[in-house]
Image (tube, rainbow, N blue to C red):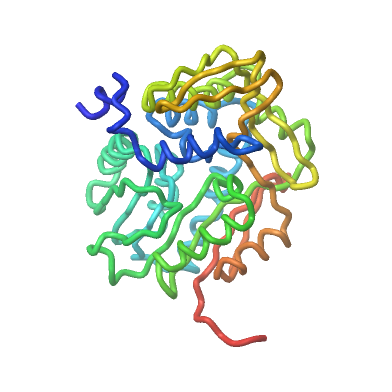
Length: 325
């Protein structure tokens, strides 16, 4: 019922933070909307399609690394931890980890509630003896995990290089928040994409089938549906840009003509050629990744990569704080 009412345009039922972020993002210069708002139900479905594209190397590369690395993860981290997955999506990589670490519980966290519950049911069928505790939340904010796992040692799982969607300051803040949520002695298994040739990167974020373009443009559809927007979606196009100075792919929505529209009763105009910045995907070298983890309070203890060094998986520990050095 809630989903239907939002689809019919009752913005009072929309996420108030979504409304605030969209209005602030459209008013600022340069215009920018946080990437986490891609993931309504349709956005989550489109992202799963992206992960299967031939150009999109991260998912299949990371999956292969996980198959090889997870037995070692279990040896280092030990079995019986509660696995907490941040931004679980469809949890397609998760069974690889769960089969090897024999967790005491699994807590998938995602902002898309319907998608979260469906994927949790699927996983429960795969692992009937495992306690699965779906947690609908924005993991970018501080979290109080279910009391059921309060005393259990924890293993955080953050695959897919989602950390790359954040500017470095935000990434460090998130890692610190994860450390606080999981507790001292917790471990974190995290994926990070490597810096590589521009052509490979551009193909991955601007695929020939146009699925990434549809994913990007779906944000405008969501704004129209949930915030009573009148954005002419056909007046915008998907753009992917490699920003070498900041070692990141940027995704933008570029106006192809002058447009005027309203969102939640607020008027906006976007001239032709101006963009709305919707996502960053930072790429990390080996040293960069280790510095990022340490800045967030995590000590790297192991690292795995593929033969082409296109993607890396890190295992880090929330060790006790100690004075310098």
